[in-house]
Image (tube, rainbow, N blue to C red):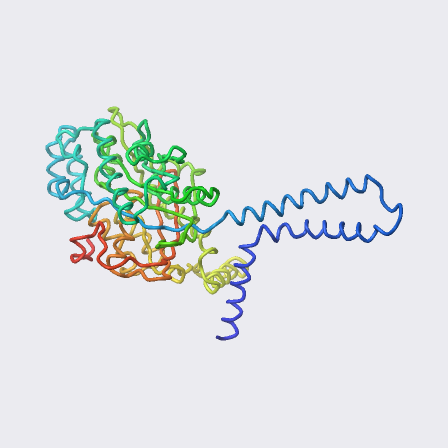
Length: 484
């Protein structure tokens, strides 16, 4: 190893040391002051009448906060235990619910709610969507007109969620009564009782289970749900497993109007659900959760309003996607990478970026800003399959090869945009292809309304055994297909 490489390695280790012990180091000056006070007091014990009762009180008041701070730091560090992914499963809709492109176009033509312009717009959009012929819609949306009832939406939720949870429990052998935390995220459908309550009732979970239902957070909510489960597991030693369920229910919020900005949701989203079991025990775990990073741009009006649920002029409710979505996503991603980069990039990349910054700002050199190479931090990328334009933009911005974004494109082709669960279909694709090996780092990233960019970094501990069933069974031999 050369001198420069050795120096960079030492700097990186020093950075990790300081970052991992920042609370302890911050408490050091207070501890040192207390030590000096104690030493001075001990040395004065042999000197009669050198201190008064007031001095004892002052010393006690000095020591008590220091002792409390040290105890707090110790307990906090003990509680921040690693969190692991035991396993996960994805819902695979039955073939009877397929919505081939021709069938979807015919359906819009026959539906009485759409005019000729709306039919033509949806036809052009679906042809450029990157979807294959096997994406699925819920039963209620196969009817003409669609049956947007509460009961139909509940039936869709039960079909996807229960299928995914059944599969992950069967894969892991975990008993339902050992699940202490349930987090369910779904953006648009928030029934009462909640979908987390549906899971508790279906599987007879214990009475002290902690339940959370996250809504309105968009396609990045699955990673937020993982972060929430991580925090609870680290702070509560009595919770053996946390169940995280991600889905999107399409039935209740299908848009039946003619506003173009609101018709996009009908063309982009398809059925999907995932269930993941997290634990603080490494035994039988397949991945370690290295970190969760979240970025929120809601302080900016343009970012806040670019994805909005609203009623059109005719009173039809839907999701309006403005033309600012892609620029906002790019700006939010840039901010997100600025936070994530120092945590995951090697020292060489950080140094190159710092030198580029200095050359441009200090020496006023007219050079392009250096874009860190995130391929040095991760072996695999699971980019939310929000649409072909989203994948294209991230591939271009991060300088990724076609192979690195292949899981996202193929998940979009086979399953469509399944919202927050899409990253799990992509991870399943990587595993079905046999590409994930022990020690590999996987970056899962999603975008959501608000506007948010969330990501989770996983480290593979144990690749899946061969011939494990999953959502890609029976069709993996056809992939990858040419990008469309």
